[in-house]
Length: 193
Image (cartoon, rainbow, N blue to C red):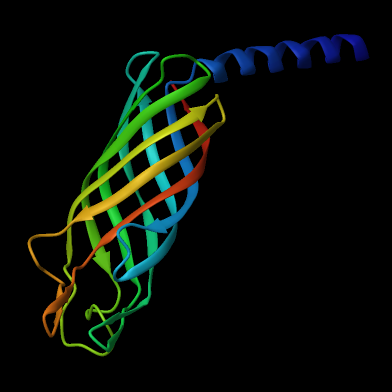
């Protein structure tokens, strides 16, 4: 009887593994961090990513992505004046596209959409300049993947309009930037076919 139960359990487990390997829909949950570039008003960022992906072919995944990224403000001195830049949050609402040449290995992808900026309304604590509310969001990435994990390097950027958020100090200007280069890891949760 024990052998029969073990054989049935092994059979069920095998079928489950085969089905899991052929899942087309995944929820990707991850963490990321990086250093700000260029870095006039922020120093670094850390955040979480959440994305839904559907494999439309064995090599191409499309979906939607969101999450939260905290960009940490830093002090910046221009012409003898120190600007105490505030932190800013980023909530993206984006389309996702990934290309997987093989079932395991290198992949490329990007998120494209709109990035909502949150937090203190002022760019710096000691100025009256308001930060932008958001802009075009771009997050290209290059990484390694298998069925369960994605490990990647990425560039995150919110393109705001014109000189919005720029702070003039004498003849110099601190441009406003929400952008970083970093690394991240995401776990893939299978949602079935």
